[in-house]
Image 1 (cartoon, rainbow over the protein chains, first blue to last red):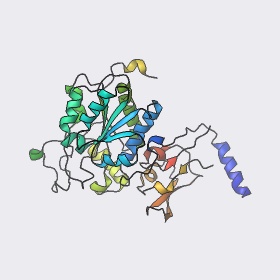
Image 2: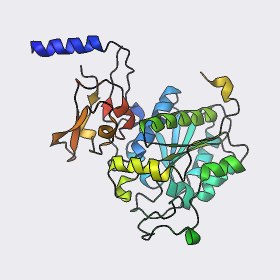
Image 3: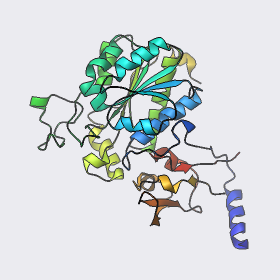
Image 4: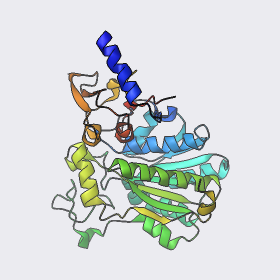
Length: 269
Length: 68
């Protein structure tokens, strides 16, 4: 016992530096039912951290899409509406117009936002609605068993493209942030992040925060797409899936900010 | 107090934290939690409380109490 106590004292003296406390925000501090290694858990934690830092964690309404994002309904401790499949863009439009003082977030997957809901998602961006869309892109329909989606990469094997995606008959993967940035001039903030490494996770957090700040100051539509892994349907271990995300998925979906906030320079702290 | 607090009942044995820990201070236990997964154990001697496990964990297993 005495030896242990000494060791502990020595350690604490040796590491007498300021260590930043880090705790999962109360908004999502519940067990979630995502698959082991799924990026959803990281992404929703980043969103909750940003809401907490901006003092908006008790002033937020989520529009949750259908798919793996639906599992959020069981873990999130805030106002939320589980939208019809693909319609979160339309539902959040209404929520934001009726409650302009609330932070409104649509949280969707690529199948929900870009496949069945491409009409609603694009229209919300086109009308420059003042809410924020977060799209988790894992290049397949995760919840229903890994079918091909609009963002599946060329040659990627899924349960509905067993020989690999043939882009001559099924089209090329959709790059929604690029579409918004190039076509909708009024959009306030457009970016794409990834959760493949701790560095990318931290960078994604800054994107998420800027998107929420753009909404808070009423600048217009903001969207952040986040590349995520799907170890279950990709048939990989979680660390391998993260490596695959970096090496195979990111080259098709460039990371970065496609449209920055107009007055960002003045607000940098 | 440990440098990192854990909630072993939430661990799903995905191994993301084990893969990124810069000090290789995280390993799996030999016991299972209530969900049937081998949960992570932190070697407090090797740990430097950098928080990368917190950043990477999708299931909120870790908490860094930090210094006040």
